[in-house]
Length: 201
Image (tube, rainbow, N blue to C red; front, side, top):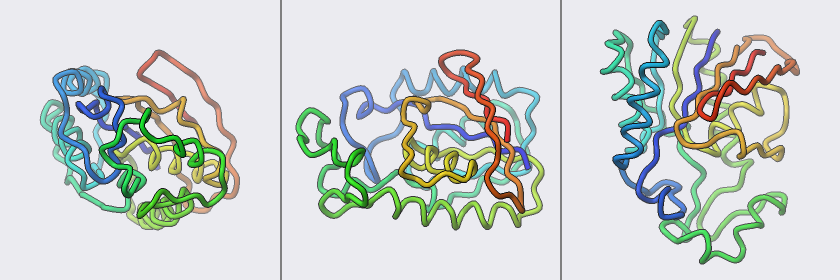
């Protein structure tokens, strides 16, 4: 199965340096422009289905890509693809959260009222298991920074503690192969430009 993994376009909260998590807004003007540019690069790709998080910024990204490419594919909104829940930190600026570094450095850390990376991994793994059984050949998945990072890491057989945020800026695309009966897969990473990362598994 070929999976095109897309992170939603930017929102005003991205631009203001605020944590979004399960909150946040629809796409900003810059974000809409990013997605429109991405749609052109995806011409020729004809997914059997488009999956997205049920959060507004991901839904808007998916719907825009479907519309601009005239894809005749169902759009399936799945809450398991949501961003990590930052709990009480959501809406706060990164500069206002001195404990934010603990997300990256402390095993099993959860923000107050939020999720750990392992929590996200459990729900993303459930989604991936269902996707492998779907019978699709090609799909597009629109997610978020952490959910996409976890998706990629699990596809490669790594635990979610291996964090790869630098690869996943807004509007970025990863292309990967998802095998139904795979152990640890080999990863070949080729950076084409600032918006694309192509992963072959």
